[in-house]
Length: 226
Image 1 (cartoon, helix red, strand yellow):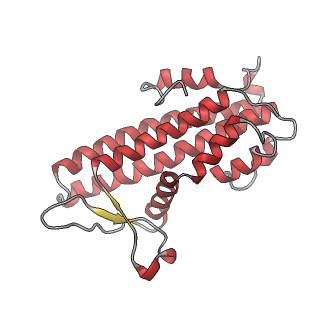
Image 2 (cartoon, rainbow, N blue to C red):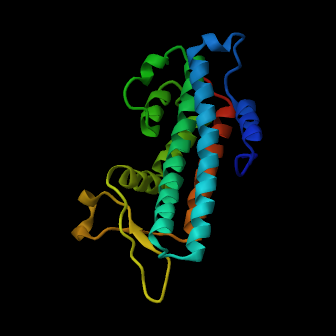
Image 3 (cartoon, one colour):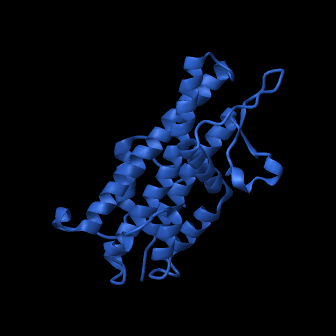
């Protein structure tokens, strides 16, 4: 890989994505539905990564002040936790859709009609793999969806989105809070695994997500042959 992390500014981020795009810009872009989907996914990827960075930084700074703050600040921490994981998950999803849109422009067997129904990363991979079985981007996407950090991000995002805000487990003397994040139906003996809300772990989620975006984008940019 030539990059370790996506560019910092939104403009540079978009230029980086556009330089890596595996299909060329059409003369009348607004008349190309697949291109318009790629553009929407590009905007989404940039916005989600930037939002993840901001909320993770705010959460880390607040936790440095207190792991068990007054209710209003606790609510802000929970909001930043939700936004960090939601945007991390969405950043990966938008990156995969960006690949799918360009794949539709490169492989006659793929069309936007294939985007009906769920289009989570595993669904996108299932549609792209048959058309590009040996492409570096296919291997990159397979690596991402199997990665433990991606499973953690997806699980915690789903809990926070659909089940509410889990309680925190605090040790005495004060230590970083821990929260359960797995699906309760899958827990052995009803004991949830926990995720430590340390600044190191929060930044680790950000770093992994940025690295996943880079891995997929640069693999796509290296060439996609049907």
